[in-house]
Length: 371
Ligand code: SF4
Image (cartoon, rainbow, N blue to C red; front, top):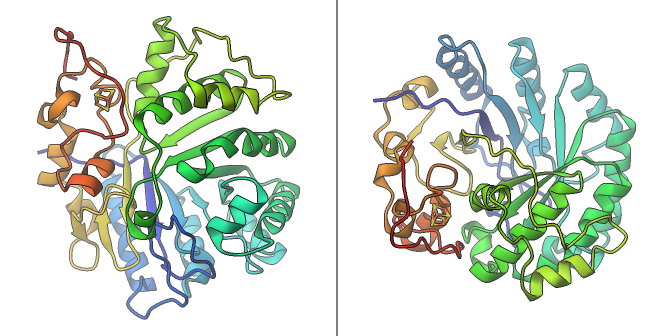
């Protein structure tokens, strides 16, 4: 029985948000509910973080998220408690009038380490996904304000069928605003995202290759629910062809002026041996591996967080690649990738099954050394 130690711990302060985005995994609601995390719960969570980190003396990075976390009645107290206990935190707010200079000053005073803002495409696509005309313009304004405060800003974008070709446009904005980190979420059909179409495995292969080129040109890429990106990086290291099909060609074509060459074959990418581990606490205290992976492993209201993470049978099962099924179990990239467990779970109910987004087909005699 192992102790699960997340590198990143997401706290969903509330499901409340002014928007009803089409891809919202939280299925946001209009107002905070009285059942959501209160300050007693937050204190328990912080106690659990501290107890769980006693041995290795390293706290996870906490990401305060939602819904819109700024709508939680205990948002400020949470920030102060994290700060007072020396726990690094980031905030992932929605762009509304609550995201103003006063709150940014408060967050800076409490040494927030970074902030992330979502951007999902050209103005019409971004606003359509958020069902809020004019929000794209307000998002750019918010990004400028955040940058003016000297806050480290990252952009989050969700790739799905309707916006896959908009990514060069988003990249252009990242370059204009000198944003170095791009977190790309690959749609999981959960929450309101059930109504959206994910990209196909062939499109994903082209898109991952495009991201390889983007990263080679200087923008750091973090993928969410696409561990195949690590496989693709390894393939680039092995000198495999990093050019792709129609979607790839179109993305490269739309990236003219962005200093991206579609001809690069191998990129010198060291692929970290260890995958980033995440934990997620929902607005009602349920604990899971991520907000996109709705498999509850405990609840902080009845069990301390460090106890939930200690010898949890589901987390132990997930941690052991020997348990994976289908082609993932036969794949030589299993240790680097392992497939999205959230996607397998959302689509089939079997969290150890194959990742439907992966186009890789292991050959018959792949050499597999399980780590
Ligand atoms: S088969 Fe599974 S482990 Fe291999 S690259 Fe695809 S998703 Fe990853």
